[in-house]
Image 1 (tube, rainbow, N blue to C red):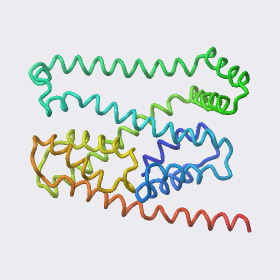
Image 2: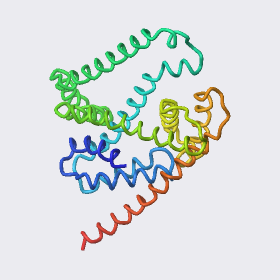
Image 3: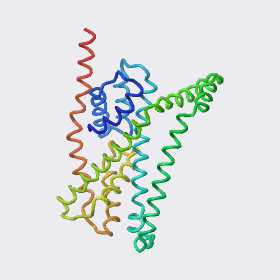
Image 4: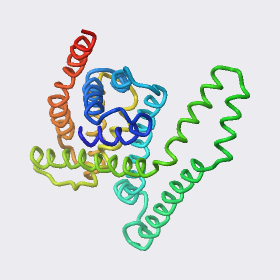
Length: 278
């Protein structure tokens, strides 16, 4: 929870320096709780409204939530890409990755090079005066409100060009959070199923479940996450039939217990607002 609030605060602080970390933690806690009890991104919408209250640059604050989510998805994608040799081995799609370790090293070298190149390329775009001026001129040229709003939204992203290190830190924290989630599931599996399938298997499974969780099928994707995790772990374990669904269910229960107090943040906010009005 603290790491999740910190990585969002790094982006929020660029948009509005008056927003404190405590306020960010309150908002993040509220959104985290509601995401477990409501559909889809309802928690994100409410936490955005919560932290935008009495603050300027509401568009920038809303975009920080979207950017935070996008970075999280990119990090999960990076984890999947780095896990491809393991995935290919599990599904027996390639014998090369097992017999020829040079191919694995070459794959990781190329992948790392492409990721670094992409980061530097995005940094180059954000620092481009020509692209910046083009967007500003285009926003003044078009009178259509929708098109004008789109250019204004793109223009907000250029605020990050002087705080690129914040985005890098956000990426590092996002990957760290995924490892912590996977390690939690790994510990639960060892203690309940008395089987050690390795941290990598749990990392791949938890990341895929979170990506699937974007689709709002049920409140907090209850039932869907358990089924998806169970199915993926079934493949990762070499087609062993174990109670993997119970592992994810226990993990969810623990999270729901710690998320429940976040609902009271909203009531504290109302009380604080009434006191301020007085």
